[in-house]
Image (cartoon, rainbow, N blue to C red; front, top):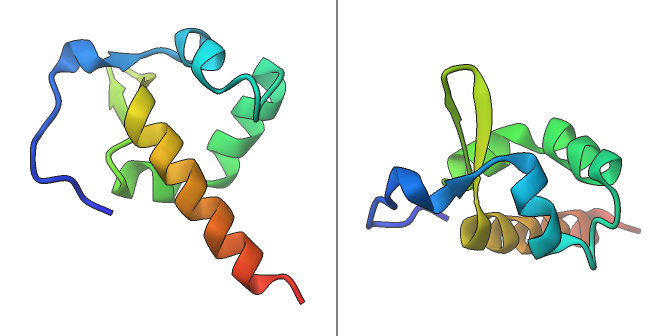
Length: 79
């Protein structure tokens, strides 16, 4: 799920600023943090997550797209 155009650094936000964008799916900061820990590699691969000066930064739109892809993958594994 790689995008051809690189987003600007200004397009990335911290976890607290991402939360309002995804709160219907991740109602708490803890639920969002758990998802990020569990699926970090996929989020990085999709361009949804970068690390700048030791801090996680998220691209809102790419995060939502990656979450859908991750969810689709998990759904296909459910018996």
